[in-house]
Length: 287
Length: 336
Image (tube, rainbow over all chains, first blue to last red; front, side, top):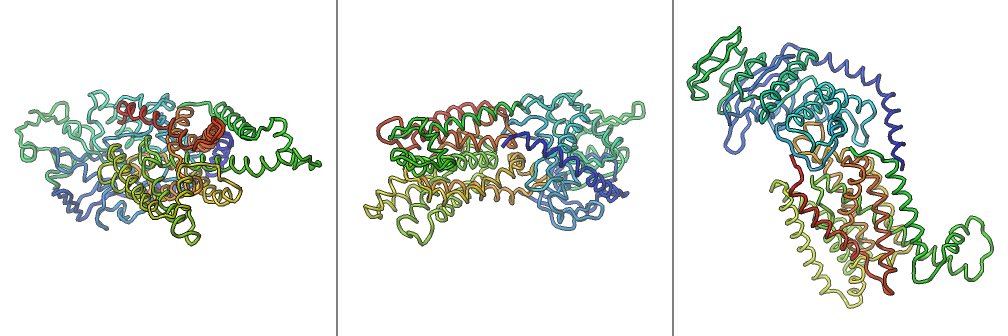
């Protein structure tokens, strides 16, 4: 069994399937354009005594929505429900009127990309090997990634600004770089929707900013719908088009940052006296 | 990513061929390399045979070749099953021996040998009980968070349980059956003939083939369950598939030659050192290396002393120190 045999076969398959797949992709892109891409209706999820209840909530397409709230408010739980990773009841979350709970795994993974917060790895894969795993939903059970899949993975790495990292191993990366590689992997998934769980936690100011700039570019350049959880309200107000403020498993307020952020509401939710200051047309929260 | 699979493959292929040839030469009946080559090629030329050539012919074709084939198949099976289980349990220290899979298979096979006779084939009984063992370990490790400590403890306990059951069988077995059982349990290729090879090949061939096709997905199964699902993997279904195939290979191998431990730990590690972690490259290399290493171990087992040492002893002598080393090192490995 010579490895070159496999490589050649990968390349041939890549050329053959390219046209068909591009056409398929165009169809998919058409399907998912709608004014309200994601809708939540009567969602309930509870575990270990914690209960998340969302009566009605919608996330606009092609925009960044940040879910904010104090620790333990249920930000990550809501995000995981939206990602279809938790066992939710049927007919509670809709992506463009498709019920997420009844979608099969690969179909769902071609629709939603999810970037987890923590990440552990048992084997030390190279960065490219790791990113190309994002292609799984596009491949059948017994097939290997084609040359085209590897190319998509390489382009995703380029997009997040790590083009020269393909051959490094995951253990050589800093935590900021690892976060970018995780984002690159979900870009390789080629989904219209991207969910990110606390993408800036444990990063310093500059690396946190880099990631949020990248997220912004993804909506502007690629039209992705992005939902992310953030704990820094100022960051959220600056980068998000919409905010969802939750507390104790309930949505307190949602809408444009200007509507959601008020001194009274923040005091109510966080139990802190703050003042809102406007500098150069941007709102800041000061303690 | 460690590159250079071309030279790695050349070295591994050369190593395999050399050891294959050496295995034909080694043995209590001395055959020179020249005689071996002439005998191997004799079916092609169908020249008239002398009496001495007749002896060489039957030694090579009826004693050494089936034994060599058995070592190749079993080495391949144990190594592939080890590599797959490591991805599945998300831990490079796991192997079929530690998970209690081998003990389950040994108990099943012994049960069939002593009590059922030909009614229930050894392979099937071995498969059922090793499947039970691995599913118990999997379910316990899931509920305890899958740490290596809980995994190993559960494996040890499951092993101990099946060993206890095996002792019961030994106690109840007739002296004649007991002798056969004991000999077989030590792990040896000395009884391998073409009939045994023919009984072992089909299951292992099919399972290896499917696992090799599946090899890239093993990378995805080695991520956390949640990550796997978010990438579009039906984690439960695919894990069951891999468990089924890996268990089938191990149990058929154990049913054929008894317990040979640690191959599933040593070989995938060696393969990863050569080509990196990606199972796309690790799995094919593991298959060939597994065959080569077990063949070499069997050569040592039958030629080092005047009597034959069970081959399982050699694999343990390499495997256990390696395991201890890796366990110490794993405390320092980066795990996110």
